[in-house]
Structures are given as C-alpha cells and as structure tokens.
View 1 (spheres, rainbow, N blue to C red):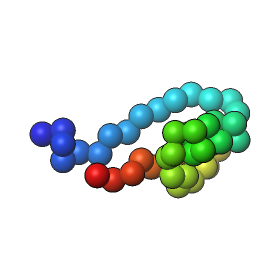
View 2 (view 1 turned 90 degrees about the vertical axis):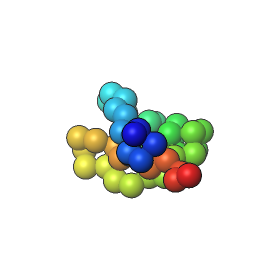
View 3 (view 1 turned 90 degrees about the horizontal axis):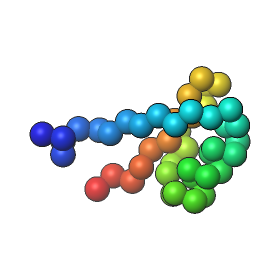
View 4 (view 1 turned 180 degrees about the horizontal axis):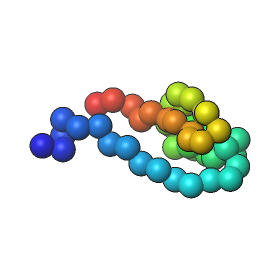
Amino acid sequence: MLGASSIIGFAPTTDFERARDFFDKTLGLRFVSNDGFALVLESATP
C-alpha cells in the first residue's frame, strides 16, 4: 500500500540556504523550490 505512495517529510529551519546545502549536497536530494515558507526537495525515484 505505501509502496505506491509518495513520501513527504518536513524539517523546520530558519536558515534555508544552509538547509538546502545540507539536503542537496550531503543527502543528495534534488532542489525543487523555495517559496520562503517551505524548502521543497525531491528524492531519487526507484
């Protein structure tokens, strides 16, 4: 059931640039957008 669903996670931050650097460069997530409310990143698809 969950195998066919997208997973969404939220991590609070006050420093979007530092968070983006960590999630993008360290964890390898792909940056999608930043609207000042949410930093949206995407993981690799299986």
